[in-house]
Amino acid sequence: MPLTIATWNINSVRLRAGLVCRFLSEQAPDILCLQECKSPVEKMPLQAFRDLGYGHVVARGQKGYNGVAILSRLPLADAGDLDFAGLGHARHVAARLENGLTVHNFYVPAGGDVPDRAVNEKFGQKLDYLTGMRDFFHENAPERAILVGDLNIAPREDDVWSHKQLLKVVSHTPIEVEHLGGAQEAGGWVDVTRADIPQGKLYSWWSYRARDWDAADKGRRLDHIWASSDIAAAAHSSRILRAARGWDQPSDHVPVLASFDL
Image (cartoon, rainbow, N blue to C red; front, side, top):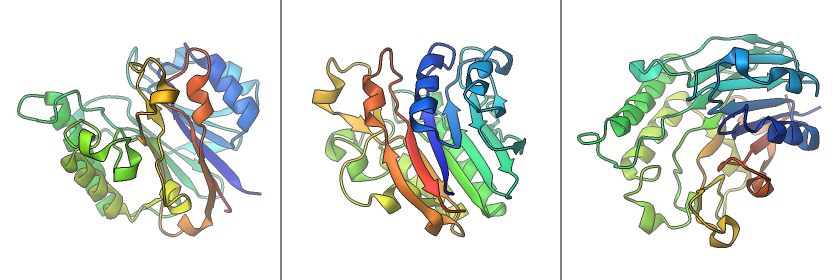
């Protein structure tokens, strides 16, 4: 049986617990990784997810900000967390399944509005965080691993609605793309979504500012699923649940899914 994993920046797990339950009921992934939970772990609505069969949870929480959680139907063990750039934020957690597979769940800093670390501290923190990821995976080459999350960068020209217009917009600037590429290359990670869907525009995020997000369709692919090179060939059935952006009181991100024959 294939293992299906999903990633979703939920933008408050307490506010959108109902949407998480809907997604789990309708799509039934084996593992769901959430970012931007905006809640301490003890206040996350985990019982609602357990009631749907997701009784195994590894999470790191933070009041009002950040926060990452891994919900699973399969037994898993806490595999720790990493704090790149010394931010002290709940931006990463890892879990290990009984078959030895490690799942990394990341929420990379957004980076603020100005793509210049000299005037925008948050942008510098984002670059430093990505450098920390690069250095870690250079020293700790991943094996039998999947990395997912809101990486807050749309790396390819067809990962944004307008490459030309977004070149100087945080999330698609050349320096961010370079830093993300460095982290990916250091670990030998394979972008599963683009391996499965190599051509065409793909988005996982649409701004709340758009009056009609669907018609305007000014999206970006900020949410990613990567696999270590030893298992990348086992990946298939990648998809992005665009319809979730139109659900009641939605997150501005939608779930990204992939399956693995492991």
